[in-house]
Image (tube, rainbow, N blue to C red; front, side):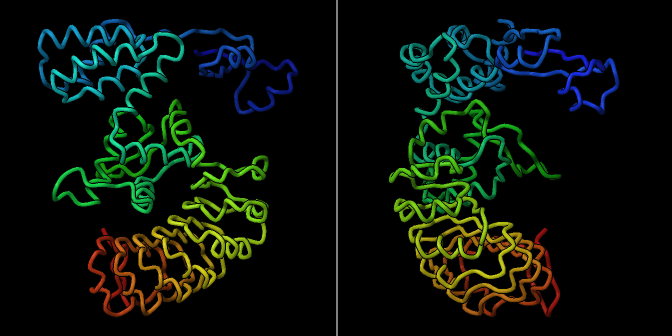
Length: 399
């Protein structure tokens, strides 16, 4: 739904927000809510309809068949499916991607059972999304439900998301000989193809850099249940004991909840007395697998981080005044990823870094005062991403 709002100098207080527009300018507001449209103002309102039947069928055929010419029987089934999708592009693409490359028996099964699952009322889109989700294998279900940890509109870096999936043990190779990295990439692309991600950003080489979870994908919160919690000041008192993954942790939570011991993910930490708070996390959350302490201006990291024996993905990037890492970090033998990018004052890494024999990614980009790496780096047999390498005091950056 779109509504036009004309700016007129009539003394309305809210119009002060639009001072950059001259008199006679218009603001176009899009919303799914009629109530929101009414609140915005008395401008012209247009209710956007769905796609035409012809365009709906063409979109479905592009998504479900690609460049392959379908049989007459498949076309007839596809028309029945499109009729149930209420001409909504998202619903059409989700179902089309679900059936892409499937056998005739799968199509017939969907015709018999899947169509009945799709509701034709206002909740139809949600029922279609749930149908797509329930056709996922268990690893994909875990990967998607984990996305509920990110706030709405959060820009998710693909590299970070894949690292977090790996840290939680969600990635399982789809076939013999497939590497865990290729399996993670495939998981991401499947979710993208099923329209669970949007606003994809690519680099100059066409590689996906970031995305957002689709704004209609409340399903992630539904299927995650109580395992994932986005903490705010208002809900820190009632942390369920089933919670395993937290985003936005405040200091009063640390003092009031025994359930914090079970936490496996701490996405971001805020509040006053950061060093004290980080120390509490490191000493209490002994089962952490993923820990993000990025951009907190930390001066030091407590040696107690060495007690987090399950930790696999710590992110200490953008702590620009962090000068050194605790030596105990070399006790974290399950570490897969270590992110230290933009730690401007970091001068050296622990000499025993080679003890992290499972380490796959070491991100030390833009650590400009880091002049050398520990000896015997070649013994890190699983290391496949090293963003910077120093030879004779000089830097060589990964291209």
